[in-house]
Amino acid sequence: MPSYWHLLLLILPVFALIAIGAVMRRVRWLNAEADASLLKLIVNFLYPCLIFDSVMGNAALRQPANLFLAPLVGFVIIASGIGLAYYAGRSLGLTQGNGLRTFAFTTGINNYGYIPILLMGALFGRESLGVLLVHNVGCEAAIWTVGILVLAGLSLREGWRKLANPPVFALVAAVLMNTLNLGRFMPSVVTEVIHLSSVCAVPLGLMLIGATLVEYLSRPAELFDVRVTCASGVLRLGLLPMLFLLIARFLPCPPDLKRVIIVQAAMPAGILPIVIAKHYGGRPLTAVQVVVGTTVLGIFLIPLWLRLGLLWTGV
Image (cartoon, rainbow, N blue to C red; front, side, top):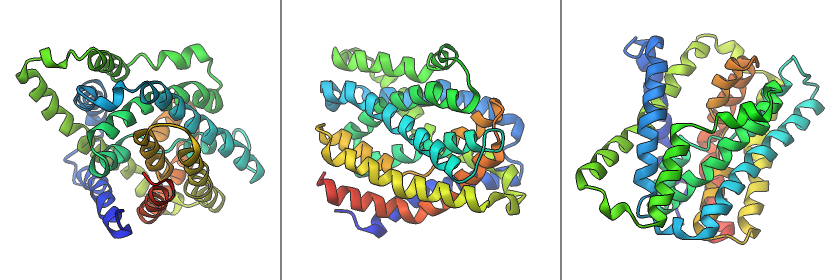
């Protein structure tokens, strides 16, 4: 069983990379003009390479429970988080037009991508990491359907269209090739290029996150709001982890999926909602207050929830 300090040391490089990205923006080595092209590189090429590298030859993803139950769990975790956050925000006096929708959207979406990818690989290895990536398809589906309905009131058709993206296409192709054991026919040069590219995905993504947050860090007084910061912290890193650990404990599923649920339970709010809130007419400042508050708390609470979850579930 990893100790609290061992788990803390595992997550510190994640936050160090975010800080490096912020420094790169401050010294103008990473300009705002480069954000869009860098994001496209990560999402359209590097992240699909990470998916292929983690899924191909992964025995855990030949188990039907991991293949079909994992995305369903991802959908339920995000959708229930958004729903609970919506009613919690309303009980605190937040209203539509004054941050309620953005609060619910941001608080309900845990950081299901970059931080868990590093933790799953370091703690449990490649097979569990592959299950995480399949699980994340369900997270994406919940964000672009339930999440967008809550945030902007868009139709389900508009949300589902967002799922037609390179990472999802890569996942479908990789799972199919893994199931049929077609990876052995891929030339070694191709697999090496995919592997080398996959290694770049998470560090670049984390540095881009740090660079994106800089514009808000220049106004530190605005980063804290008593209702938003405290409520999101209690919900995202208090009540929701308890709920998800109950799922991990009692859901009849393979150990790899239980590990995914434990790691997801410990996560702070994700960064993506800041960008989505800005694009769909939400309140980006509310999203930033949620993200910054839960991320700072997460530095200390992520190792605690991970240790408790692993101890309680026995995986």
